[in-house]
Length: 474
Ligand code: GDP
Image 1 (cartoon, rainbow, N blue to C red):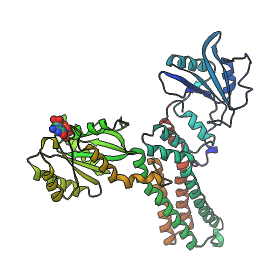
Image 2: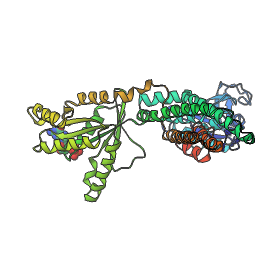
Image 3: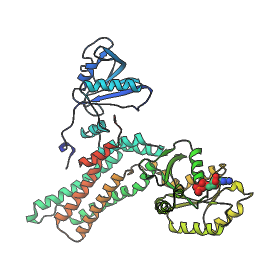
Image 4: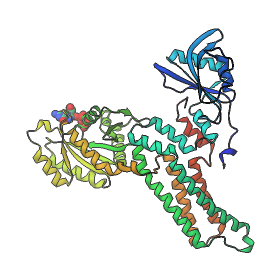
């Protein structure tokens, strides 16, 4: 389906939700949006000066001090902030009540609004309305979600850029140009009897090549964009007992900034994030797997291999005091050879047990041809230097926040890939002097794929997936 205005009837029934986190706080915000929002608010709100219908007749962006009543019973003292559509987040009439921040207070306020004609909002419904009413495009709606969930400086920065609409502008410009080429081809079809060409095939080829290059650049930026939003995928590899879990704990413990479980990953491996020097590392410990018997171990190894292949950075850990140093060196060479594209650091662990680890490190470094850093995961020595090197090794990946427009979401990436494929097909068809109709078809698909990203072309399924990720009240 094309054009958001053709989509669904705009669901303007009054909805309400708490916009602030659950729990005890100084203040909480409960919002109402939709038809009759002001009238509903007036039913339960009494302005301090006793004025009736205060909110329905209030100008927008004005705050009123007063009380909420359930009949005779006072619920709380609040500030009511009035928005008049279309000058509100959802473009509808809205009221935001700032009440006291206790869970019981909030429950009463919500219940009061539900009793007076609101229904509870679905997750993301406020933002969905903002989109459906043309206040923001789909990319900006997603950026709001990404900003709320951002866990690193750079993820936040990318979300801000996207919210400002930089990617949208770029995509809209692309769409305009595609539309232009499509329109000329379709004109040709209308005049097919007369065999006219509204633009020369050379001109069309040039256009299509330009578009391919630009879409290609965006597709390529995804690799970088993903790093910003998900972190540098870092795998800790090595034999059992090398100290992988200990290192993981040390890294996470030392870098207190943010430690969180990645949502949505399987529990077969441990994945945690931390931030060092503004870079987010997503650490995978492939060790935790081996404790639950052979079958699982097997599956575990398969999964660790998979993780290694996906890694941006690998730390290969070995026990510096090992008596089987030659075997370790052979392993290191094998792992490196299997993943030549992955940035690689060899870590000699347990240096606290040796009087000197220099010899071991030199041997490994020269025979395995890799950079070696000595640490004690247990007492923390060398760990700061390790972190420093990790940051340096991925600096080129992370200096991207300077790049202006990046694709960070898998959904956008896939749509762009499809658009690139369609353009590629179009190019081939032109080369083979194919029918105008076929070329037009491919360009039209590219147009639709690009439109899917900003929401110019939407389907219900995409909308549901996007907005289901939001919290209620957003
Ligand atoms: P994993 O199997 O690679 O995850 O290894 P673990 O982290 O479970 O460590 C294996 C054993 O080595 C444990 O008893 C750790 O306490 C010990 N260990 C780990 N790192 C060090 C270290 O730097 N120095 C010393 N002395 N022992 C360590």
